[in-house]
Length: 323
Image (cartoon, rainbow, N blue to C red):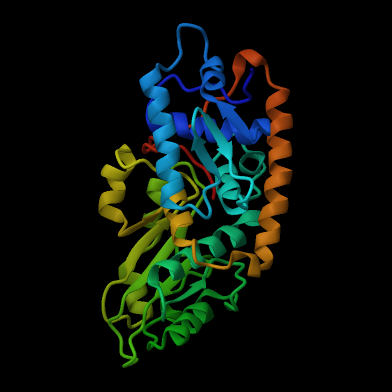
């Protein structure tokens, strides 16, 4: 059995799980047996029985963490797609994670931004619970945000019930969003300031560890009278393992909240995503993008199959990318 994505050479549980999910999606497989998983690797370069067992254990762990949104299941000696589960959200995030996806090279980031920001907004509402509030702030926004940043800051302050500080004298006319894509907060009944506030950067950029620097807390405190420094958040479609260098190093000091693919799905368990028009967009876009990816990969030299990305480690300075 061939694979459009080259199998990983490092048999960590995380990389095996990411590879099998992506491989099944691209190949249109509804199930794959453990023996078929092994057969995708070159002879004498295959994961051993213990590593395959760990792969199955990881799939079970992911399914347990978000049983209503994570579509894969480890059943006996097979990994299967749950036919009773709608995979739209997970597949959308998974396709966004594929570094060979055409939307990257074609710079179609604005196509997917509203949907990814909606997913993040709803995940934040799932985290904050009853009484929580959240708005998309990236431009263009579907949440009623004015176009000009100064007006948008005043609008957001009004939505939060907070006073506006120094805005118009401090706004860069070329700045569209002040570095944030979603704002979320949980006010108290007394309507006073000093409540939990999150300013979240949303990105598909592979070198996402740099993105929190786009948000300058001191600037936002000058613009809106929060009463306390807001928490800087980062939302990405990638699955980020607990031992990833990027998590243990830079993000540990720059980000107060990290939402990766599995955390997002966990937080969306009780949210009605089908109520939004963007849900239909995610279904259609994912199908279209998959077709483009499959066509692109099928035309490649078989000796030059693309690998999946390794664990999300910080990239060297100078590697430019949008998103």
